[in-house]
Length: 347
Image (cartoon, rainbow, N blue to C red; front, side):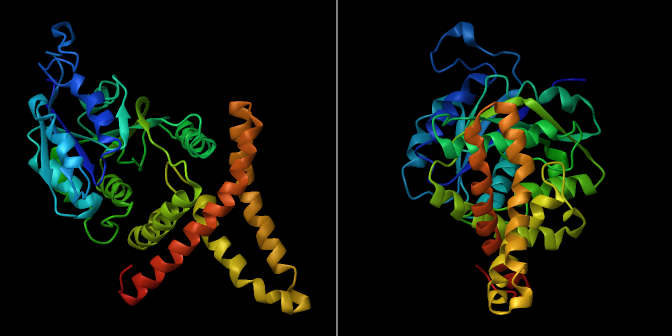
């Protein structure tokens, strides 16, 4: 089977702090293009990567100026007008000339073999897409490590064929994107917010009868959050868009290749804890609140134990309280998401 051309699409907004590292990591993969060191021995004449498209989704910092510095390296900068991550990705792949569209995020740094390890999966004509995993750009941050090692643990448990692929390192056939209509731009896509458009797309591709594969050897370094307050804020957004996602794809509510029913139940349990506070005023029902608190704590136990066992580090016992806080943050977002879905209102 002949090698298909690959277009790389990088959506981003206010990515000035990370986009240079991102572009520096992928430019050496371009076909017939020297690396940033201008060493001709580093050329990639056989590389299928033919173009890099950065989609600027309404940045107010100097992101576009930084990307403009890479024009000589076949990097195109296309504005999307603040459509949100789903809309930005659609602008990118529709402008692409390649047969395959590889997506990474603007806060990711691609490993030199990130693309090469995904491509073999696409030699199977029944496979519509393939996705990879993360490395941690902030190994000295406790919060970043807790977030990262949980992701790694989940990825280690994922099968080869999946019904879920994240948008941070994923490649799809352009023909499949055309057939399913691309990323959602309305129900699960949030301008200025981390939405669920990548998950929703993978659900639709799977439901259309296509195969998708997970490749753990394809890696991109990620700038995980290092500030707890900002992380919990992002998780509130996560809960909001998950509400819309599961209302749209109710058959996936029990979990997917990445998350389980227990994961999806944690935010509702957190909200039940708050709702149960008045039971303390009624002696026969005083057991309800502590029972719910215990239940939420026990839900953190399996992942906490796995992280400690795999890393041999007791610092991952702190995953349990982080998981509880995250459940509340997601619960607030989930509640707001359900309310807006029912009333037809917005955020």
